[in-house]
Amino acid sequence: MKFLFDNNLSPHLARGLAEFSKTDVRVTQIVPLRDRFAQNAKDEVWLPELANDGGWAIVSIDQFKKTTAERELVRKHGLMVFVLDKQWSGKPFWEMSAQLVQWWPTILDVAALTSKAAYRVPYRRQGQKTLEQIRA
Image 1 (tube, rainbow, N blue to C red):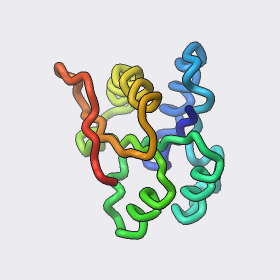
Image 2: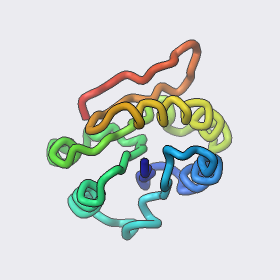
Image 3: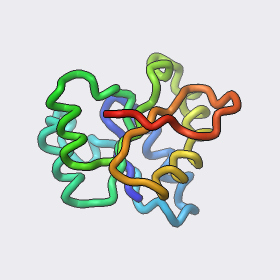
């Protein structure tokens, strides 16, 4: 599985998880959006390209609610999306990193079992072991 971290997340999160995930055979690539596309690339450019390339999941704090067109692009191209719940916003980098590392095995498990779906990733685990499927 390949993971692209949207521009609304620190590229350091993606690069750090890429290092941590080198021992997991399910992960072939983890990159921040800005390492693959222009930093100001429009969704209309990079979403179809990921879909055509295949095997990509998007990790974003964006709720994909900015526009109907944005949600439609995600649906149309059948991409897997992991949306970090709004509670992730504004958290200090190290705190966010620690939470994402705790959730990462669950995200990998879900990504390995499904495709073309969107999931909400809560901030705190507090007994939660699964992700809620949502409509992007």
